[in-house]
Length: 382
Ligand SMILES: [Zn+2]
Image 1 (cartoon, rainbow, N blue to C red):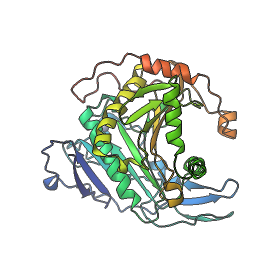
Image 2 (cartoon, helix red, strand yellow):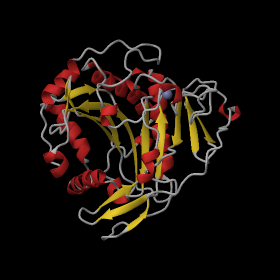
Image 3 (tube, rainbow, N blue to C red):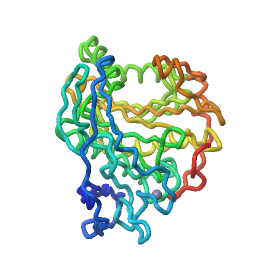
Image 4 (tube, rainbow, N blue to C red):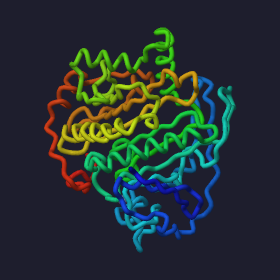
């Protein structure tokens, strides 16, 4: 079992240690954060975009946040005498803490469901950082299966905890990997956003899921039916496990896009069984290793966990799944979101989903190392 210990940083932010099964670390006796940080600021703003009916977070205060610090000043490496980092311990396995420069929060509360021109409110919510490993270099795909399982336990525990906070409408665990897609820290890490509104993309997916579910008389889910169709067709499958399968979707938008879907209908990571989480620790690593084996240098990606929003109207049909996407279309080429995509949301994919799936199925994955340490994966393509 993962052991979980919640502590508090010097400015009152919560920091939680998730220690691997079998760890003997005694966190209760661990060192305190002695940095004497200044009190936390007020939240930014959310403004209602009357043109689209979407909320926009205005977080200009984040301009001062840490940007690609040198390795010896990394804020998520373990604390040393010369680097009093965010994590006041000499070692750790997985750590989750409240972001010091959050887009949402730290205050919690409710914002209106709808607005008009001029409607705004505090950017309530919570933004957390998830450090996957104490090692500064490497990436998720280099983690051991035990560590991967600990990260999944952290995602599940945080999903449950954040879903219970006042005013939260959706919880989103994700990882941005690679400076090309905006990563501001090289240390392998992810983030979790707890939003005070249903995000635009979740609203679109939620409406489609809900309408499908209703028209089937509540017997079928949209994601479940797509999973079945892809497995029957087979041409875009990447892997099939006992509890999870991964495929390139029929109408993939990105040059590299993979959906990893549980076979059982669950709304979120918190609803997975222990056995499902065990298998996920393996299949998620396998998927990332395949992505990393496609090119000689690490491929930038966004790994996005789509979880059912907390609105009961979207909850029944909402179906947990991962969407992993990358703008990389060749060893030395990235796709940029230009006119059609950025302005119109109309994607043009320069690859075929079937050929990408075949490459991912056939790629030779290097054998797993028993250590969690990375070998060659530092940095990203320039
Ligand atoms: Zn680091």
